[in-house]
Length: 287
Image (cartoon, rainbow, N blue to C red; front, top):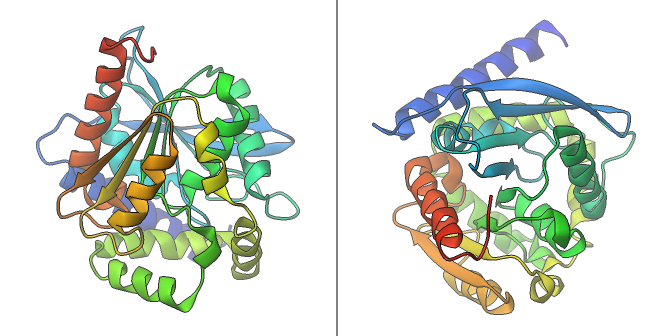
């Protein structure tokens, strides 16, 4: 890694950690550390919670969106860490993880997630995903039902037919002005790391997937959460997704934008904790 890239990465990481501390207010927070696993001959980086939690605590896996990395999951990861075993992997080709020869398609990323879970010794974790990361989570849940705990889909941009169209790009730009400036620093570094040509291929490949067809086949409980100010995923679209799910629920975070895991982590952490504890209390899912 060159000096400029190394410096940019450090700046992005400091921005993510600082945002985590600021946005969580007076909530308890937990430290994160880096771990590495060998998955399908690729070295995969994961941010994990550093402190011990009770033996029956949930394991929670945070999944980043397309071309992004786990860095923008740091605020939510830090907020969840005092209560759960938290894992935020950089999927193959993203962030600090090694790149496959060609960008993996959605099924390939879900298969890599399953292989990574084997190496990390995770059985049925709860999956929390944002934006296009929800696409990976939905594919995983539909094809690996025995490996998947509850899903939390934050701002799920599952309408792949219109991804990259002018109308959607305008909505993303309108949403972007509401996001913290530090998110732009992080995503700029993620795009630089991933590469422009690889990003174009990855987006084109992801558009071939139709995640909405898989929703009726998901057996696990699913919480769909959107920010009240999210211009990328309109409320009507989120409501339609929930209706397609056998066990779906919709929540809205007041004042939040599309990347609510970064812009409103305190509210998201409370939402996730309440949801998982309710499922456990009702006997619908167990850690």
